[in-house]
Length: 282
Image (cartoon, rainbow, N blue to C red; front, side, top):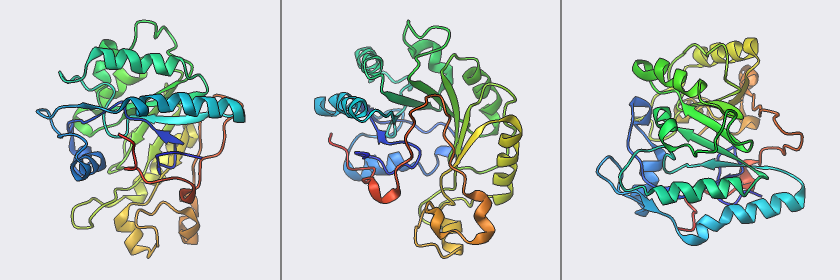
């Protein structure tokens, strides 16, 4: 069903351009940078150039939209997994952003998940017709970041109009207080990669997150344990993203909720049904 994503909380990923810069400590082991370096997609960092993807890649959302209409469902599209839509970089042309939002407006059977670490750039790059509620088919997401900038980042994020507001806490490194209002969904999970370089998931912090979310009526989505816990638990899935493998003592972790903003939401695809993240047609 999904064309180019193994991310459990979406059906497809779309990158209109590729390239980004690290913002804080959560970016330390950025998977997008590793993939980009491996396949030569773009040169990472402030001095690197953001590369526009192929014309055929830009047409894919229309294909997904037609398929969704035919099937009477909605697809969630993560934009962008190998870049940041709100990256204020000189190599990103305004015409790219204009065309991107045009495509989003014209694919109403797709729910676009726009995730950023740069909410301060909303005011500069959101389209002029965004309005007081945002686009109905756009979920606005923000990576929480580390302590120094988290409060200001969350305040800007929550005060920006959106149909759905969601937080990404990947990797989830420490407990933090969820805002009382304005958050619909939280995605979180452990870090994957070489054991010697990554950081371990704190299960007590995860428990605290779940309890907060339940109290405040926020949907939660636990993605994976991360590689360190996966190894300790002797899971076959090195990322720890296959719930069927979890021991009984981690039964409470098995939560993958989706905001119910539309009546026709379809289930998240199983891991074996989706393709590898780096199989993009550039």
